[in-house]
Length: 268
Image (tube, rainbow, N blue to C red; front, side, top):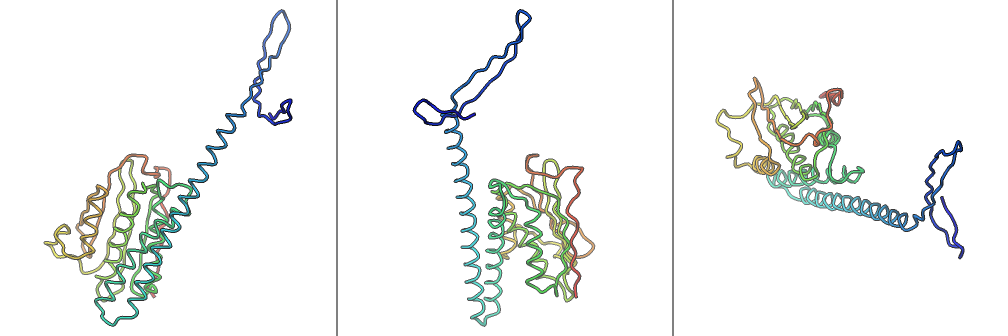
């Protein structure tokens, strides 16, 4: 309730009512409390939360824009040189910038700032890879369970996913690459799997000893988020699986939920 003091100023009131009976009569007792100070404190806290939310949203927006600016500058530099190796390296660096920028873009769109729904991010990543290649050299099939991931793991996992998918495209044979990407969530862990139908890896390949920058990035980031990377046996191509153990709160997937429908793009 709102009341007015003798001096005309407004105050916030809380009314409590209690019904009781005595001597065959029913009574109602009302107690009015002045809660103006409590209301002011609550309003101040709500405003502080709103200001912090807006600030965090703006920070993520600016970080995304800065990363996209750097990515654009790298692409401009790539267009101005003739060395094919340098062009490839600049493109890889630009793609990595874009992968991190996507994380901050998703955080900007979200109402939560401590976690990220990773499935839409993975879908966006696959869409961008296909769009960049005009759909002519790869076909990506994605199956993703809903997964709420801690923000500290979002950027590293996004970079790992980017490296695994782009590596599968790079090392394809003469035919268009067919890439399967899956994100599976259990009660205490989640797993990211990327498999292709390419020429495969040497039998003695050791990701931890690889000298290529992509594999070194994958190995370092896997260690950073406390995961394990495996190369699974496959009749054709290569299958990488990253498994990360976590608390049950990390996963939104439940048995009665259906995973995101696979999205398949036909190769022209």
